[in-house]
Length: 337
Ligand code: SF4
Ligand code: FES
Image (tube, rainbow, N blue to C red; front, top):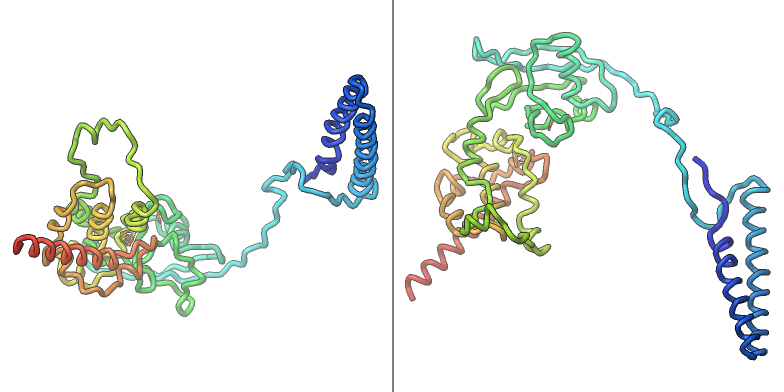
């Protein structure tokens, strides 16, 4: 890391200011304004003196006396590389992973225990991949991004639906072990892998896309769909869903009544209903105004508790209920009048 030691005013103010003053002095003398000329000359001399002293001070403080203290921020040239950075060495620890694997032949969960070397940065997905590469290549799990974006690595860790890549091993140890199981709220395929067809069917049920009445304008737009901050705030928190399915797995209603559309799909119904660009309007409300829609929700709120993105599906469902009741009230009032 090298820092330049010359402050900018020291260079540029005398370089530009003094010639301007001298030029103005010459013009004044030629034009016959002797007194103005003398004032400008005096200012030039003062300027030269002040900035001369200031420049000498900069050079002395920053260069000659070796302290390299800068008087003001200057250009920073970074000559470092990753190799120059020394990180503290991470301690290693063997942690027992108790993995409940679904066996499609016996249709049962069977526990396998693996000792895995971990450090303080290891997450559960790291541990499972270490098992797969070093001791048991038959272990199956789903994953992709390894950074909490794709929503693929959902599983039940220590009894709670979680993203494996977002769950730190050391911070979640229970008696020096980690327990991993597949999400039982989804059909099981093998080991930790679950079938998401049913999940996506539910998602599709709520028509998760913007609806526009003018199809020509929709597919050949001529202007942007501008929104105010207030319009954006209404739906943006609900649009962070990564479709990991944790909320569905945590929902006690879905786990006892497969008819219920579930928290993920309903939160997306609200997300599109609240979007000012959408023109489906009240038909979105009618679509989920069903027993298997919003009215099966018992507001256990476990969906919001496990959501890794803070989508808060339980809140979205209550907002839908409110909108449906409001809409119904307006309809009744209109039919009476
Ligand atoms: S609402 Fe949250 S928990 Fe449910 S699928 Fe979306 S991101 Fe996952
Ligand atoms: S691997 Fe993508 S969210 Fe975990």
